[in-house]
Length: 340
Image (cartoon, rainbow, N blue to C red; front, side, top):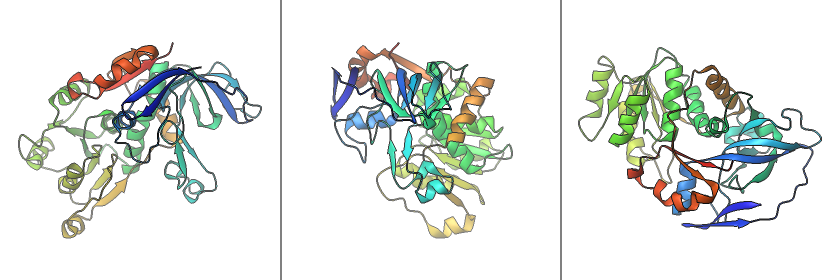
């Protein structure tokens, strides 16, 4: 089976790997058609991904085809096109019992803690598959990154009454932006990369854009929002300075959601935090119902996936292209690897 393995930072190897075709009753055998490249893959390649071990088969943003099912699989059938919810969890964990398997104490993420989808075929529990008769494999591979943003917006309970600031216009921030717009909120974006800011302005109906390097961010936000600050700030940067500064950008009584993360401590001035009576939330992964919501929205045309994919490579060409996707000047938003 044709497989790409990240042997150590900066070292991919394409090889033929033997594969056990025997299925457990609840498993499905999946043929991989598309692999979306995400920040996790880029960080793993650069040797900057926490809780990661090598060698590893990357890939968790997947558009797959069901080619065989175990004896107890009922939710999908052979031939179904599916998105993969890549978070394997244990049903007995407290968070899972409370309906929050996305933040289970014990979790294995496909392509991170266990081998992922950079191969022709793999097996996975069918309960984590989300089929669609209408979506393409490209679109199905985008469901997972969209899911991160969708879950963050759902966590913040964003409505049409909210003014929202999305900080960071990478793929996760773009997902949050789209679902905040789908909730009919008024949305602005903060981004220091002018290329990404231009992409946002061209692709989405925004209240405006904010570049904190050009002038005071709060003044820019008040100008966009009629003198007000955003009631919700979604920080998708994973940058310590940005995450700490975000406290100052939220309106009194507002919500701050950390979508991105970094390895370190976040500090804030407690009197200011209390004075505003802020709500601080973390957002991790996505729920099965988030995947179903996204598929429904894309099928109905409420979410447009066309702007997302800016770069493509065939599976056999990916290793040669991968280095370029780490460079900001490449303008990559989402790179997609094609197997068929």
